[in-house]
Length: 152
Length: 374
Image (cartoon, rainbow over all chains, first blue to last red; front, side, top):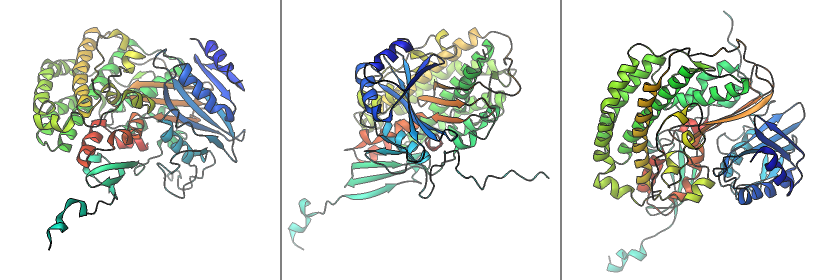
């Protein structure tokens, strides 16, 4: 399937906000309320059985955080990227950890690194960082202790 | 004391919490696993990684593209070349660089040497986990030969920093091919010896067969990859199923297990070493002459865009996701490590087994902790 066919199929379920091709891969941006519908559809009816990872990108200039779902099909060898833009001040999205079990840990990592709330998550504890460290991968996280070495 | 005091049902069988690690020898690094136990049996568990988090992703956002290469070594110190490779592949795809063929062959040779090195270390460490101290003395003998070879090429024993964006740093040194040929001449015999020593050992089979069965659907849903998922009879090997670089030129087979138990995962790794030796032989035969570096701009400034590349590391799907905003530093870089996903599924395969089996199951996943924490 090329990216247009995949896009047409997604369009039968939900209307993407924005879609483009990037290095041969479909990038479809959808509304945050549609994420479970789309991933359920992609997994059960379009054989996208493999979730490579979930991560987020902090677009501080546009005041939004983008959650990225990278999907792959082991049967058709197709790839698709689903993107959701969230409000940077109060990012919240529903969990998909019951659709793809691997999402459970990827969501926990993304949550603590970017301060995103994944609602209905089965185990919403911190995974890698310590208590008191808030969203270190956001662009405005202060790294005060990182100073260049003196010149001489 | 009366007799009834010793009756079994009178013994308290409360559940209790046991913290395994972070300094437990069988976790192969600083990993803590919180177990809920009933006597010797595991009822529930929750891994707790993050003790050696090194924030490589954050550091990389402040580095130029060509400065990132040494950081990729540190994530998986047992197969540094595979991490180098996936990073180089991603940036090359962003820049649209074509790597010279000789460099591709050198990359394959280094990566397969790395794979054998990693599997040999797993073999020795797993033997120790199971209480067999002998395998390490045998396996490290072969591993040392390979480390000497790869050190001659790259200068590093574990963190090689061997690859560059657009090729490899150096051409192969004098005597490398001869040394590799000499190593390969009897390597398969040694693997037969190891299998007789450990894998087909009666005590070993009794402790691993039928233990920690990983079902196919669960493995796919958890994104487990590498020998872990191939042990469950799922034929996913990125070298074969989505070939990158020049792997489509080589003739090798994907090794799979039948039942998905601990023994199958071990057997898959032993077979994979044979296949790696096979690939190495073909790579030596078909190696062309020529340059080892493509023409790469002095300042690497990819156009805005993003890329996800993946390679088959010794532990599974090793990936990198780079978002470029058109400057000389990546806007966001994310490493997808196989051990992270493999460990997340540990809960599914351990419940109901004894704690001694848990050690065996965790060993058979071949975890590398810095890769999980990154």
